[in-house]
Image (cartoon, rainbow, N blue to C red; front, side, top):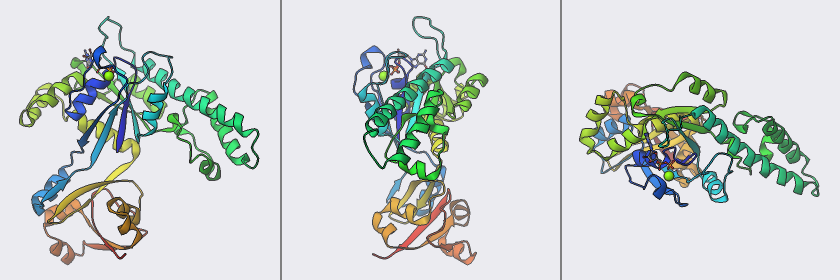
Amino acid sequence: MKAGLVGYAQTGKTTLFNALTGLTAQTGAAGRGSKANLGVIRVPDARIDKLSSIFKPRKTIYAEVHFVDVPGPRAKGSGLDAATIQALQGVDALAVVLRGFPSEDGTVADPIRELADFDTELLLNDQIVIERRLERMKKEKGREREQAALEKCFAELGAERALRGFSLPADEERELASYSFLSRRPLLAVVNVPEADAASAVAEPLAKAAAARGVEIVSICASIEAEIARLPTAEQADFLASMGIAEPAAARFIRGAYKLLDYVSFFTVGEDEVRAWTIRRGDKAPRAAGRVHSDIERGFIRAEVMPCDMFVEVGTEAKMRELGKLRVEGKDYVVHDGDIVNFRFNV
Ligand SMILES: Nc1nc2c(ncn2[C@@H]2O[C@H](COP(=O)(O)OP(=O)(O)O)[C@@H](O)[C@H]2O)c(=O)[nH]1
Ligand SMILES: [Mg+2]
C-alpha cells in the first residue's frame, strides 16, 4: 500500500513521517522543500510472528506500507499545485494531517476548520478537471453517458460535497474508471495532538465532523511518537506505556488505513518463507493468487486454506488435515483475513 501524507504547512507532516518511518527528514521551515520524502514501514502483525516461530523460515516478510510526505499547499485557499496533485494521484490512501497543537505564534488549533478547508481544496480541484473535460466534450459525439456521469459529479461538487460518498449506476460508474478524482479517494485524517492529549481518543466534535464527511480519523501526537521512534526498539514499549499510549503511531495509522481501504491480509507459509499479503476484502482466490505471482493467477487450479488462528494452536498441517480443517477451495472462494493459503496452479 502507498499512503500519502498531505495537509497544510506546519501541521506536523514531516514529524509524523519521521515517527512512522523511523527516518529523520528535516522538519520545520528548513524541511519545507518541494521534494517529497519517501519511506517504508512493515505492517506489524502478531500472526506473522507466530507463524514465523513455528516454521522458522529463512525469510519472514511482513506487508509493507510506503509513505510519501507530500509538501502540500502552504496556506488555506492557495490551491493544490501540479506537483502535489501528481503525488496524490499515485497513492492508494490519502492521509491529511491536521494541526491539533497551538502553533509557535500562539494560533489555536482548529482541526475541524482545517479538515473542511482541505476537503474544499480536493473538491475544487475535481471541479476544475470536470469543467475542462465537459468543455472539450461538447465537440465530441457518442460520449453521452460519460458526459451524464460527469455532470452528476459536477452537481455534487457544486453542492460542496466530496465525491467519496457519491455513487452512480454501474454503467455510468464504468465511464468514470479512467478518472482519478481526489475527492473520491478514501481519506484518513490524522489529528496531530499536543503531548497532554497523546493518550486520548479523538475529541467528539472532530470525530463527528470527520464521520459526516465520510473520513476515517485517528489521533496521534507526532512529536512524542517521533521521539519514541528514535529509541532502541527494546525501550519503545516501556516509554509508550509510561505515556499511557497503548500502541505506537504506526500501528494505529495502519489500522486506520486498512479499515478505510477495506484491506485484509492472508499468509503463505513454508520453510523458505513466511509472508503476509494484502488484498481487498471480498477478493476471490485467483485475485489473491495474482498478488503472489501473475502465473499463479493465470494457472489457478485450487487453493488449500487453513485459518491462521487455529493453525497456530494445532501446530502442524498434518493435524489440521486430520481435523478436517484444511479446506480445498475453488476460484469463487473469497479469501478471508487471516487465511493461510497454498495455491495449486498449472502453467
Ligand atoms: N508542539 C508540537 N509541535 C509540533 C508537533 N508536531 C510538529 N510540531 C512542530 O511544528 C513545526 C512544523 O512541523 P513539520 O513536521 O515540519 O510540519 P510540516 O510543515 O507539516 O511538514 C515544527 O517546528 C515541529 O517541531 C506536535 O505534535 N506538537
Ligand atoms: Mg514538511
